[in-house]
Image 1 (cartoon, rainbow, N blue to C red):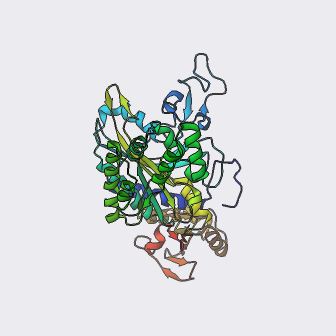
Image 2: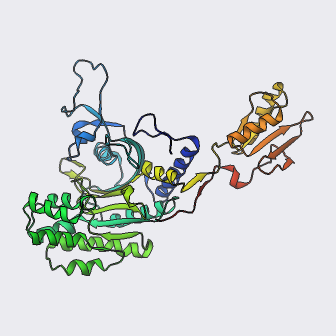
Image 3: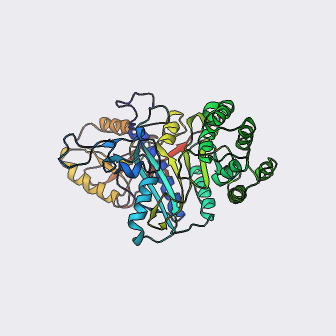
Length: 451
């Protein structure tokens, strides 16, 4: 991870690093499928109008055009029909649901693991091309709140199976926040949320100034908004703390009830990992209820590794709406931190378990026959390209990280050697199997610190 990328913001992994990334992807895929999420993939491009329709920042969107556009083709960032690379998977998914609604069964549970592109300044944990892993549940017309609870638990299970430090899924509810702001007389709730969303970056004093300067809040209103944002608990005590602020509003009551459902179930099923954090706002305007952000304990400076929330109007077709709730894991951000901090390593750099050596160049074809027998039973095998001295072939296997070398004698007998221990034993290609821990590359977690 210390090497310099040839093109900043577009990471490429060495083989052993890629194996760690594949392990992360496999864990996520397996967990999502165990919970009944179906996999889809959407196209890499959307129209500019589609991408920007919910107020996203256009300076981060990569426009897409040919070097020599044909006459009549849409081009230019101001043309809503021009093409751009998607910067997340939620907006494309909303479009996918609308276009395929007649073929989907609702509630529709999907997971999606793809590359996305965002033109921001590269730094640790931030890239311009990166992989996201999303899960969403979308309904037709309505979506029970219980899915908001379920998604927090699924993500807690998925992240808990990864070789990362402890983490906190911080949950809030925008109904709670918006109802509170209205209850204290602040009607521009979206503006307040945007200011509160900057709390960790600029601090409480500056947020209070912004609320007064930009939104016309009084000092007392700004103080009340900050008191709400200061509430953070791992249990149900946040309810009493909110009530103690003395604000009444129906939307506040609804949001408080919804957040209570998430936390009460999480206390039982993921104790200490899902917390009520009333400072979480999420800057995107399409969130309407539950919002989530996740940080690694001791690595909070990395930013959120998983975020999302409830959206009720992101996808619609005429009078028909498709409310949903979803979470997105920043896979590349996680892998960067796993590799840079040596949180995990691959047991070898290649999938190969056995190198089939050659005694003579004429034996290459018969070695391929033996290799085919092993491969038919799921054992990854390479066949040497030429009959060099056995010592040189063994050194090649050692350099590649291949644990076993296979020898075939002139009489047709076979032996296999574990080059890590030096043990060499007779082997039947129709029966021999390596130890289970050697059959596939193992990604081993290190002793992961939390600070």
